[in-house]
Amino acid sequence: MEKSALQIARAAYQPKLPKGLQGNVSVKEGAPTQSVADQEEIKKLFPNTYGMPLIEFVPGEAQSYAPFNVGVILSGGQAPGGHNVICGLFDGIKRLNPESKLYGFILGPGGLVDHKYMELTADIIDQYRNTGGFDMIGSGRTKLEKEEQFEKGLEIIKELGIKAIVIIGGDDSNTNACVLAEYYAAKKCGVQVIGCPKTIDGDLKNDQIETSFGFDTACKTYAEVIGNIQRDANSARKYWHFIKLMGRSASHIALECALQCQPNICIVSEEVEAKNQTLDDIVTYIAQVVADRAADGNNFGTVLIPEGLIEFIPAMKALIAELNDLLATPEGAALAKDQQREWILNKLSAANKAVYESLPLGVAAQLTMERDPHGNVQVSLIETEKLLSEMVANKLAAWKKEGKFNGKFSALHHFFGYEGRCAAPSNYDADYCYALGTSAAMLMANGKTGYMAIVKNTTAPAAEWIAGGVPITMMMNMEKRNGEMKPVIKKALVRLDGAPFKEFASRRNQWARETCFVYPGPIQYFGPTEVCDQATKTLQLEQAK
Ligand code: FBP
Image (tube, rainbow, N blue to C red; front, side, top):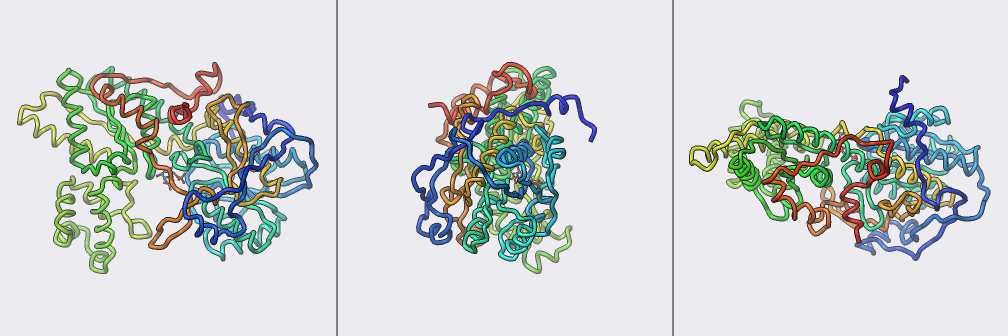
């Protein structure tokens, strides 16, 4: 593999570890735990893994450990730092006993089921220290949820003498890790399962998990480019940039980028839903900011749009649900593309018809054409940034005729997503992930199963971070999924009463009218700590006492 100069220099970076994980480690157990809600149901579903205590790792006496083999799986979308979790895991198990082995399952959970794996030796691990991406073993979106899959997995686990599996994934993957842990515990297979909190979306967090790894690096990567665009906008003074940001559902990424870059506008999906806003409300808000800035002679600006917005607009949600049903009927499914629009307009209920008719033709067509294997519209493929700018342009044209707008409006579009998912991890993510991997090794060495590795107090210097484990059942509640009540880890959406949103809301009017852009610049890996080691604004605001 040919390496860049940064990759070579960065390979030598030794991630910082919390004091509790630096030398010999001992386990401090807390009181028994309960699930965050629906305690009786969750307890019944997880009789072997419910109620376990919180774990904290503290400096301890030297102990000897027998060798143990471990399997690791990367699940779902890439997030910067995944390789460092694996490196921390590798170094952790080798430190306890050099005879221990680490196996990586290839291309996600499917690798366990299909018995595709490779042993991760020191030579391989060293190639990937502090690098972005998941290319060491690849990732995939196969869901581990069926008994046949668990049994197939067990075959290869036994063949390789694996004692524990580490699943690095988001809320769904960790829910499934817990189901797997319970299954193997109930069957007394002697196989432990440990989870690690991953996703750039930042929506796997709660009282126990401060943040999911990758969020820090991804946001800093997007913030760099947004800052550059803002500086360009402020130099040419002729474009409005509509920037869509990844985050399948929650708006944490858009909000964090707004806090870092101070754009003129940032839409927060959770607020749109809470205020029951319509598409026209959002368009009117943007158009008004454009018109106000134009009145000051500023025909330029930036608008941040979260990827999941469409599904949070109540009227759009209702329209999408009815379209899903209509197009799933035999008549709907058999329609020729050129007959679709008319047929749909005849079938839709009055309220949804009005919304459908108000959409630009291209977007209306996207809503009916792109279906996923379950028959749902693939909302991430809808070009929300274009939809909004087109509708803003129409509104401004109407206002121009009424004399309410005298400026110019020229829009450019961007989507930032994939480019942030494999960036070289920031110091924060490099350290956080290495500590998570080391914690996972310690949880396994201490016989734990059904736990997620955690690291807390991460706005303090790394030595003061607190590493440990949380029983996954503690984070669960019952939710309806595909018509059935299921135990799941609660997804964390942006809280409108949370400090990050409140900070944004208190400053957005000024950012809208004036030009308050901040230019964060690229992630720095070497240099002063205030430049290299800062946590996200979201975390800093959430942790501020
Ligand atoms: P995870 O939740 O699996 O971490 O993935 C997050 C994400 O990056 C979303 O932000 C985005 O909507 C989605 O993955 C894209 O998925 P894909 O890689 O399958 O296109």
